[in-house]
Length: 276
Picture 1: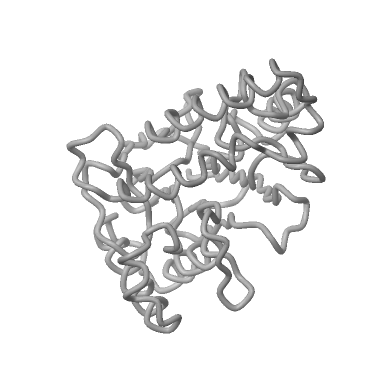
Picture 2 (picture 1 turned 45 degrees about the vertical axis):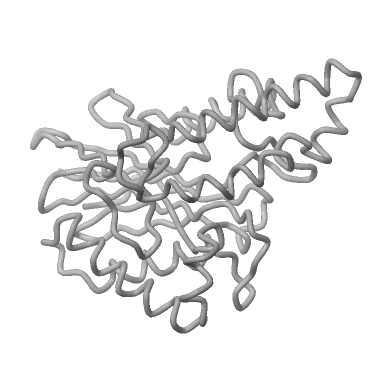
């Protein structure tokens, strides 16, 4: 496999703060999106999302390329268990799930010719976009949108709301509660998969079969509202939405907007790979 296009950018513009990462070798192409920090905790100067992304990426360096997603998760989880033990938070993460380092992940396996999607992520191939949107996020996005629109109706200026995202602050305790649905038995439509060192019900892993004729595949984090067959078009669509909806309450509804001095609402990664 060969990387055709790659791009990674932090929402702040400072790449050292980015919670996304990617990796590609002859066996796998992956994009990892470390979860937004809602606990305020840092570990050795890193956010939980950064630790999760690094742990997952490092695991792929140890794989032989023939592993299926179950074996991949088992290897990742062993490294997470070591991480939790090293940080001495094994008991705390059971009591407070929202402090767990966690991440969304999308993987293309050359050996299996499959894409596996866990959490918010997306891919594009054969003129088709595939996304894996969490229902629980949609609920909180709608709540935040209502809050922000109400503040605008009451006379708040856009600049004030970009400086202080009242909507996100109000839903943050709810987002902390949503962690109870992580990797939960999918009897609820709010359950969702996430890579965090705990077992993931197979039903929460989205699997796509990739035909042998497919030549290119693009993988991305949800820092792009949607992606296309190339980076340029994906960036153009993001730029359009950032211009017309910086609060992320209309066409690009989200759990957070573009914070003051930031360049986007979320970190973003785009990886296009020639697979044939």
